[in-house]
Structure formats: structure tokens, C-alpha cells
Length: 180
Image 1 (cartoon, one colour):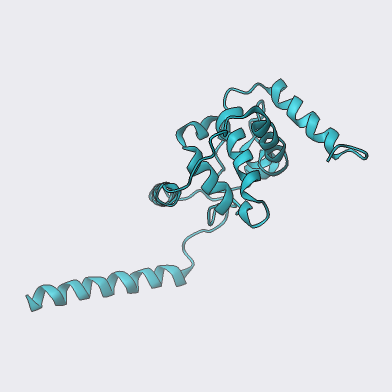
Image 2: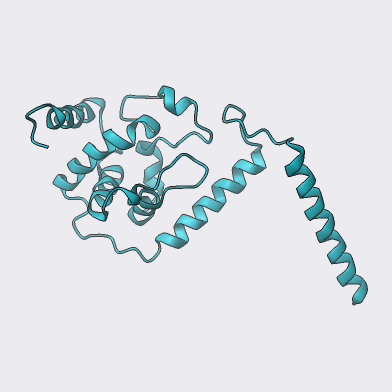
């Protein structure tokens, strides 16, 4: 029994020392223009998925999440805060998006796999080491639910011309003398 314990401690010590040597050697390329190793990409993605799922579990979703006015409000916020990284209908990439690693998902495609609770949690709290900010520090829950509504119910299947109408309305609101 003592032998197994000492062996386990020895293996643990070798792993820790080996990990520290790796960290301090500078061998891992942290440049955003160098892709992650497949195991790193898998580990980070699975960790994020499970973390969001666990933390979003008890969030109460508003009854009127698919209200057209809420979706339209969310579209205006999405245009301002999200479209450069997560793209808008008709866009495939942007200069900002091309320089990010990991590359942000195109939400028109990937949001279908997420629940409204999970979308809300990610928008509110962000995701470490991905350039996804925690919008909950600057936006109240009502605005975050509007973004969630747009991402979940407005963005998927939206045509470029439908998105252009939201963008034009938002631009009109920002113009001098606009309704903002």
C-alpha cells in the first residue's frame, strides 16, 4: 500500500515538474496567429461548453423572449457590439475576426445548438481567453435578454436585406436628431 502511494506521489511530482519546465521554457506559442494544438482546442471547447451549461441551468427565461420588439432591440445591440466578431447575415469574415484565435463562432449558425439560458449567460459573463467580453458589466439584463432574443430567434435564417433594415434603423437612431 505504501509503495503504491509513493509511486503515485512520484508520478504526480514528475507531472508537476514537467509542466513547470514546459511553462517556463516558453515552448508553447501563445501567438493568436498560431492555431491551438487539437488537444488544446478540444479541452478548451469542452471546458467552456460544460461550464456554460452548468452555470446557465437555473436562469429563468422571460416569457416574451420571442417578442418582435425585443428581437429588434437585440438586433440593434448586436449590430453595435457583436457583428464584427460573430458576423452578420451576408458577411463571412472581418478584419477583426480574422485575427482572433479561437475564431468566434458565426452565431447565425451556431446559436441553434445553444439554449436561451446559455446565450444569455455567455453574453452577460463573457468567456475567458477568447476575446468575448462580459457585457453584464456595462449592460443590464433587459438589454442582454434582447441580444439573446435576437441571436436565438432573429438571427438564424435572417437574410442580408433583413439585417440591413435593422442596421439602417439603428444608424438612423444614431444620426443627429435621431430617436435615441
